[in-house]
Image (cartoon, rainbow, N blue to C red):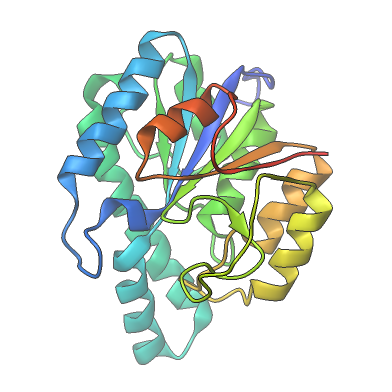
Length: 240
């Protein structure tokens, strides 16, 4: 990989939760959602938007990680298997985007920069054991000096508690990196396929580089588009 790639690339990075790609409670890919999501990406790309999509593992990563735990009793290999799942999921996105996307799943931040330099949509999975795809997305944002990172998941913002368990959970419309870090410290146990809003390393990286984060529910692609355009939306914006 050449080291002379430009550092500042005017792009947006999307951390696409793997849960968005599967029908609820199954390992069946939701091709209808995948098509609609990629149509939005195609629309933004046609308008000149430079985009990186880092794809999470979802139900497939949960399955793969548990299989590795059962056979190796190792969180390292659970992570390794989960990364395999993220890259398999990324292939679905790559295929749906067709020639707009870079020719292969990006496996490093420099791969993503190379894809953007080639005027392609960069599609990535996980990079390294112990690092979630959220953290990978923020690392790519640091590498490219991206304008912002979108966290697209089944949860439509940052809440003070898990809204799936607490119907009284309060959603934040805006918060600081320090406030997000407080929540991440409480909830992040560093295990593959643990459920938390944004992992601790991702939060710390975003804070150190003052990267604006948008948390938005992925089922409403109108909201995703608003967040991509940095317009007001119904999720949560994190910035200092």
